[in-house]
Amino acid sequence: MSRYLSADIYYKEKYHEKVARLSLSSGLSCPNRDGTLGNTGCIFCSKLGAGDFAANSKDSIKDQIESQIEFLKKKWNAKKYIAYFQSFTNTYGDVDYLRKIFYEAIEYPGVVGLTIATRADCLSDEILELLEELNKVTDLNIELGLQTVNEKTIEYIRRGYSHKTFDKNVRNLINLGIDVTTHVIFGLPGEDETDFMNTIDYINEIHPLGIKIHSFYIERGSNIYEEYVRGEVSTIDMETYVRSVVNAICRLKRDIVLFRITGDPVKSLLVEPKWCQDKLKVIATINKTLKNLGVPLLKLEEK
Ligand code: SF4
Image 1 (cartoon, protein in one colour):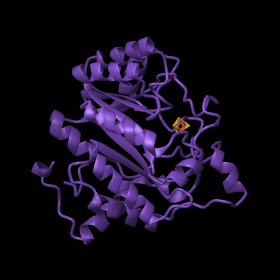
Image 2 (spheres, protein in one colour):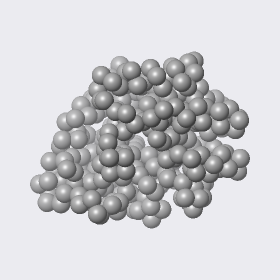
Image 3 (tube, helix red, strand yellow):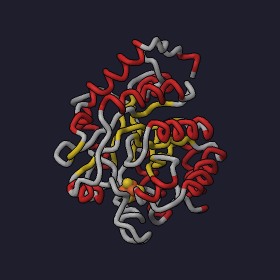
């Protein structure tokens, strides 16, 4: 039972059983990291390209899927899977290559869906055609890094394209009937709770399938790490984060899926804030606060 529509509930309702996500690597880079856009990455991007725990990109997609299934067996006995391309920009490549790897993934037995993380400025007409095609044959979900709607912050984090571009391209996908999940960060330098709620209001307006929220955190090897070492940047405390997520859940339309309400930083790379390492504690505190506030349990017909 939950007070919000979690990924677990969403998939169980849809597939009537546990669906596990297989983290796969396309082997592609990102135009904001390789110098194409004149940047060396969004300020928070680590060497893993904002995606963790993925399989080895040197292996074939089939081999990656098999090693991920083997790995996940220790945790869940799932028989259905979502092929998840998370790290870097997974539409930043030749369309024939993309077609090949995406089909290889969805044709594997038990794979019921495909989630592709990418940038809103990497959705050419050719790519959109491929996504429309995939959307007809699998449960497609496109993950886009929004982070914030505040243009000043977007420039500061060196995302590499404006909110206007995001807005145009996300609406394009939604109008094509393609499911979209938007990624949001609470606690970016210079932002406060008003900024976080402005971002949530925008998400309500475009009404995607889902949202992922996590706190701003600093990892070794990211561009922001240097600023942190110089004492120029601080991170959000757990109390403010929990309060902000609770407010976001209360404000968000009830049928928007919360695929994530906390981050999952790589422990060996994480510098600050340390509290976000304890994912279970953060989630439990959010749930307890929702209960104390009297937020009702989700009735499935609300979806
Ligand atoms: S768009 Fe993603 S992969 Fe590219 S630099 Fe930003 S966080 Fe890293």
